[in-house]
Length: 383
Image 1 (tube, one colour):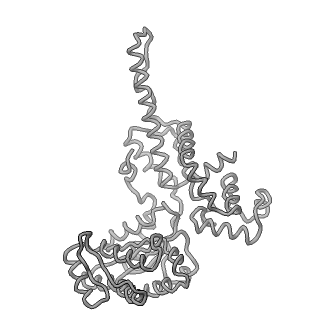
Image 2 (cartoon, one colour):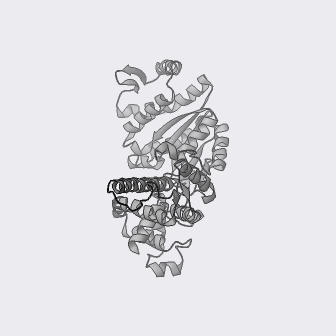
């Protein structure tokens, strides 16, 4: 089961959010899309931009280890969005009045500038102004997408660059800014940015897509197996794909084993009747879903263990408690006493940190662990 067979309709259950983002981009507005990794944040922006016929410039701030790297990523994103000869000619004309020039080298076309600290602000101002200029010249909409925006603070200690970028949002009427983050920070809530929250998908939205993908592989869910599958993945699209692939792989291995067994029986000159080589059922049973989930989390165990090693003990303890005993009230006295959690600010800090890391949903989704397979592994290991 390849990647293409799983991506029939990636925006499953996101039609309302797609309409919301499209409406913001239609008026050249700005927004923040908050959700855990794998919830479809970038894809949502791309679909909405395509619907509005807008160009998309993407900058992953996680890759920006310093200000120089940030500028280069911005420049790369610009050239990726504007590739035609006409567009590159416009950029070339623009650069004659800027501290930036367009160079054609053996490695391709690049925007280059002198690498001195005094020129960085000038370069940033020029790069941020170029999308607005291109929007006016080409009569088009442009969306600048900042992925993992808070990560620039790892080098922007004084938040000088961050504050400048926030101010720039108001200055470009034909350019939309889309910030992609795990949670909406306080500055976003105090700004005019539209906030779009992506939570777990609903089972009723996932089920038709799930059945369609598996049917394309010749497989059908027994009703209880489908219910168990949806319960295990809890609306996580990435985990759904991973578990579907494991189910399909296990089914294929079973068929291969039966073919081999059938061939061996034919050459043994046995007088006894033998089973059909494809006697394994194409109807997925609940025990197959469970065994495939167990096998999958065993393969992921080292990754999960490494993740826990990076977390403070208080956060690990909270994750384990939520896996064993899900609750929408982790702050309650009874829950704290039952699981021996830290009280007051310690617990609140652990919850906030896990939310920021994208490991736990907030109150709006009942403080669920965002990675169902991690929750399954924790529960299985502790039990």
